[in-house]
Image 1 (cartoon, helix red, strand yellow):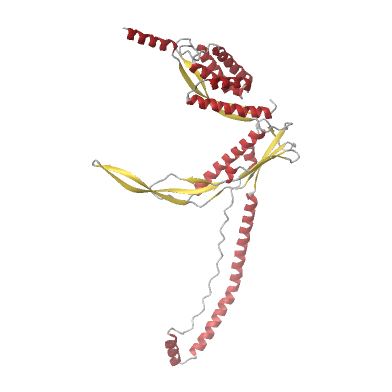
Image 2: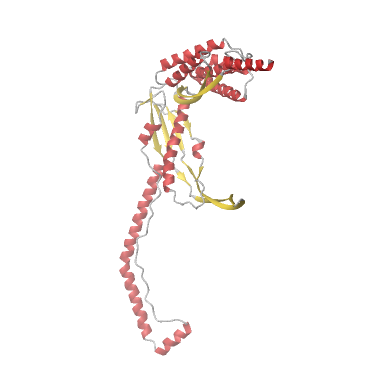
Length: 418
């Protein structure tokens, strides 16, 4: 009876005080401060793209045209020389036949026996001239640089205006290149079962493999052409390896369509990477962040305040970049509710409304909101509190992630005089 009463009391305690903490993913955009802000901030910038390989294209085309002209000139010269060569061959043949006909039959037979071949003169063959084939050069793909720059090269926080003495932002594309494709085979063990008997056997799989890259450099300069930023990203200089899906049949070696599609995607990816690097350095980059917010799912109104704070914060974060004033108001509303709830925090009391688990969840929620509001002072206080709590590994990793995040934020704020 006593045991039954104890179990009943325990169940009632779980019902009353048990808390179901839920985490919801949240994705929003915020403005990341630059690591090296321009001071004074220029009024505008203009981005452009140049392609070093266009000069190489011009050289290859010029050589191609020169080779075609030379091939045509050679053909015409040989055609002009053809009648003379044919006449010379005819004259030589006639002369040799005249000498051969002057010989006696016995002499002809004797020469044939001695030489062991037919010694009758043969007319010299004069080949018909032909135009030498000149293959077209494999040119680098050309692009509309102006459209690419307008689409992918944007410095957030600045106006893009041409020709007013602002910041110059130039990307130099070196050209997409790839190695020849090769077929790679690999023998794998496979098993089949028949009539309850398992048998292993060798199967050869094939895949296509080649390496590729599209190097690029970027230079940013001021109105006096003084260099502000230059980068030749190592990841764009290095060759990457493409491997097709392995199949039991040998794939086609024709990779023309594959490389064409790949080149277009690599171009886009590389320009986006460079634009991120430039924005990280001098721009006020609109950055996507993926994080989580917690709330407590409980019966009744026990944690209605925390749900209201979660809803306000979730809405506020998603409003950033659209209606910033209202977004900050919602975020501050959530911060106020959470800080009020923390006054009830009882980390050692498992039956408390704001127990250890809820306290830690509120701390992480506040850190997310303090990050977007750049409140590093309050964030440091929370991180100090989290360092005092024995956290599970998952929460430890989250704490370390926020520690790193705020270290970066402090560095950027200091660089921007904030």
